[in-house]
Amino acid sequence: MTTSIETNRMSDPAIAEPEDRKPPVEDFTWTAPDGRTVTFKPFGRLPVGVFRKVGQLDDMNATFALLEAGTDEAGLAVLDEQPIGELEDIISDWTAASGVNTPE
Image (cartoon, rainbow, N blue to C red; front, side, top):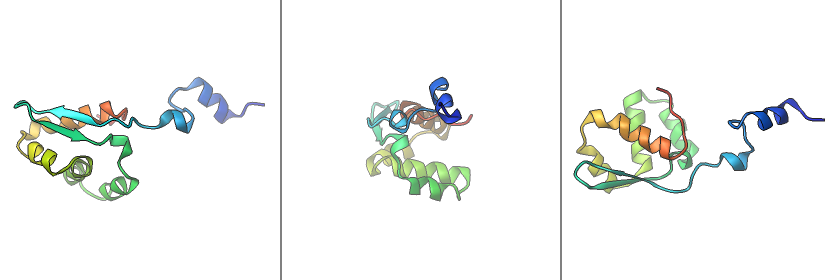
């Protein structure tokens, strides 16, 4: 007998077995307009504690906390020089490359 959970897993690819939902392990590299690069850890591989802490922050501080958790000091130095208008695209590209969907 097939349970409703098993039926949902078979019919809905978004509800996959845990091993099928593991986030990518490859880093994401973003290239700034001047050619410098920033390497991010896969978004879905950030520790749970990061998300627990950012859940208590306002949107701007949460965004910066995620960036700080996702890259190193050299990457942050490159990001600090980018126009604020680029930030949403950078994060969208990072999360998309990590296989994570973010709300609009």
